[in-house]
Image 1 (cartoon, rainbow over the protein chains, first blue to last red):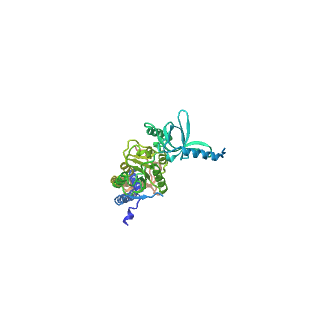
Image 2 (image 1 turned 120 degrees about the vertical axis):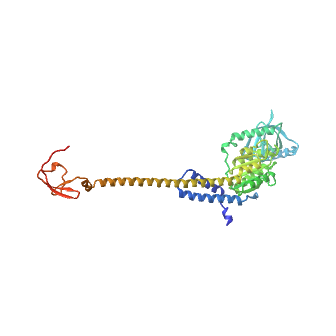
Length: 65
Length: 371
């Protein structure tokens, strides 16, 4: 289960987080939506940090065919 | 007398050439003209001096130096008549450039040609993704360049998939080896980037990265390419053709992936920014509600004042109150109100209403306006 958590796509999660920042900066007035976005942002940030903390680079040699 | 068929004749001559021409001991020296490459594998050119000219043929794979018209070359190989067309040519096994600075001159000419063709155009360069997921690394597994690259990569980032394609990166086999790896990477992809790296070396050692075929393969790569060759004085043509050119294997790793500490900080900043924005938004909403409540209260107050004054106004119309102040209401016997002298007649019976009762009376006479 712990492994499952890091199973996110880093680039797309990061992009989604940036989009939430943009949404807030554009000053959308909807508070309900804002709360939802805030929760999602926290979830994304947590996932990104976990991914960086846990994962290592995977190096393998490809044999020429 | 001996009569040859055409084929026999050509074979006879070719055999004779073989017998008299020692490919190890003899060479031809002259100036190149009419250099061209056909089908990406055959090289044709003429070698000449002031009086004579010989056609030459060569397999592109054997050509180790950049070749251009006007260059002076020394050719090793053997003379041969091509059976099909009876054309005499010199088959080149090995070609050397002759003269001081000949290689650099040839390289400059090749560079100019490829540049004119657009192989080094800046606006054609692709940028690499900020967070690459999977890359092809073309390097020698024993090299310090490989070690440096991986070390920096591991220091900075995690979660990257690196496929190492072991290549010979020096000497005659290098261009072919790197090209094979690049082709292989294309079939095993997709990759976010193909990184080609090796350590520094002498001008001669790095000549492989000026090989025209390799430069073209890098230019044609569908995978964005990044090349880093350790501390060299001259930038190779392969580097110029690549999408990204890093200065060393270490620099290459730095440019390929961000530092995770920076990204963790950036994520925290974004999170904090969002929290601030949300708090601000809640504050704004509170303020708005407060303002709305205040204006509602003001409205209710104004409404109340208005109602009171209306009530007072209505009260002032109460006829009893008017009668109490000493006024009287005059009615005809049918109880219709007489408001004007015009509607009253002399001797008419009338009812005079006061606040506490009524009087029956009779009109004695009338006058016009009093004032």
